[in-house]
Length: 222
Ligand SMILES: NC(=O)c1ccc[n+]([C@@H]2O[C@H](COP(=O)([O-])OP(=O)(O)OC[C@H]3O[C@@H](n4cnc5c(N)ncnc54)[C@H](OP(=O)(O)O)[C@@H]3O)[C@@H](O)[C@H]2O)c1
Image 1 (spheres, rainbow, N blue to C red):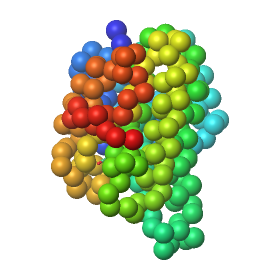
Image 2: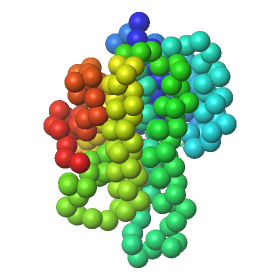
Image 3: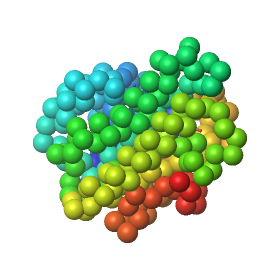
Image 4: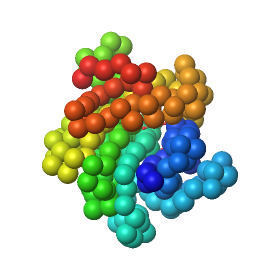
């Protein structure tokens, strides 16, 4: 049995990952601030009340896991707030929030749960192609892009650091997905994104650890 912990599992892509991985037979630990009715309906283990930017909550999550062992950790939670050069002085709180949630939290969560990870486990970070420097052809969205570029860097360092424990780390872009984050605009629904992500997670190995891929299978440029 594969035990899988997913952050941001109450809605959007995280909820669909929880639903589909449960169907595939995983034991799910769904982490969120507040459970949604849709998450409660899944009948999975829910660890709620966890604010991912709060070190005390991360320690509490680790404590609650007790002697649970994780085969798969999916750092999915994220936040997008519009930002621009012109308004940066009025948006500093939003810049910092995106850095805290998108860049720091995946690293802090992974650190907090390190002792629960099985040797040979997988760690996934749901990043964005908007964090690609080479693929940035339109500019703007400074804070989100910076936070996702930062988490990409963290993911590669994690891949190096965790190799000794045979833990593979994957940086995955879900596609442009209709969720709350995008105001329900996008190319695909969250169920399709989750299905694609699961295929890429299954392919991840120590040979491909530290890779940055689109959920559709393309390798993405840094
Ligand atoms: N949708 C897209 O097109 C797209 C494209 C590229 C990458 N992504 C990435 O995919 C991931 C999932 O996005 P989504 O579209 O599913 O977004 P979403 O529907 O807005 O869901 C975001 C999730 O993150 C959680 N979260 C945010 N801040 C948190 C915090 N401080 N502590 C705990 N949980 C927090 C939210 O919890 P609450 O309900 O408590 O706020 C929610 O569960 C994100 O990392 C996002 O950057 C999405």
